[in-house]
Length: 186
Image (cartoon, helix red, strand yellow):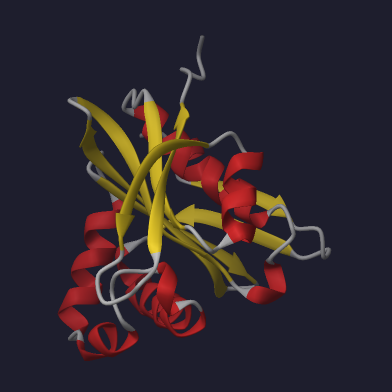
């Protein structure tokens, strides 16, 4: 993948310059920090619990950073505001209905940066990574009751598929949304 897909800069609506880039292995502590914050902030939105993630050894976080830093199987993108991690999204190359597709997981933007262009730019970075290996569509799951997130995803082109599933350890339901990813070169 060329460097244009690994890094993009954006200015959020609050006048802050935020850099979005693919994680580097040495940034594992940043990924750990934002992941623990997201699990504390919105626990029902993720399958892993804060207690489980807190118990992970450093080797788990290091492995995740290494896995998300290169290649076309997994990509972790972080948003930094003045070197502080403020956003995260992970893309996975997964089979979706018999076709290699982009599965988007672990999307999070800190509260102070919500309602800005950051979330859209973060999703664009993940989608561009999927396009780099010709993913025909992006899929994600969102909690049925998280109307703000659902509205955001629909605003950027995701549509409900009708698929639903129960979230383990919860009474919440997740909805599957998808977006076709046209080739950016054509």
